[in-house]
Picture: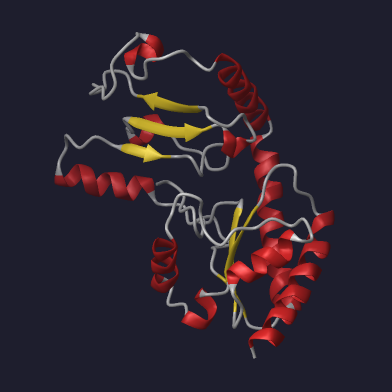
Length: 238
């Protein structure tokens, strides 16, 4: 996994791959780039990566479509059999509208890659700054440096239930999550525990995911609503 989907840390692929190759030169390298595609660059040639998986919906493309980069000469063991579609890797009728939409999304994302990702980084840092300024007992669990993905901000509030906060924010049409859609609650807790976070903070953790359609004008409104919600929940939980 190139980018951790809970806290947004960017894994050092160069270091990881070197260690793997030192153990066994024949090791095949697969990278799950679903969270990083369109946000963090990967040099597949330099790193000698064999396969990379990525998804359309993470860059505002159609759902149900993904891509797989396969280095030339890499042998694939097929697990499904049938027609010869997609070079026989995934037989069945192709989702032509989805593929076309994914292609357009890729074109748009990479056309303004640097500018859009700079904006996401600025938004992430601004949210972190304003949340810690306006709300007491807050922990920012995501890195604000280069080893942090620009679009993921993981935040913990002391003596708050993350699930309750999520529903408070839903009522204001502000949508966050208490973890990734593909990880169990226990897996998310293990990541936060590894960051030496106390239980009173772990239970109050939310993930703010930023996209290319978010803007600076939203920040103060969102921070204000989160602050009021946290205050209300803390009063109830006393």
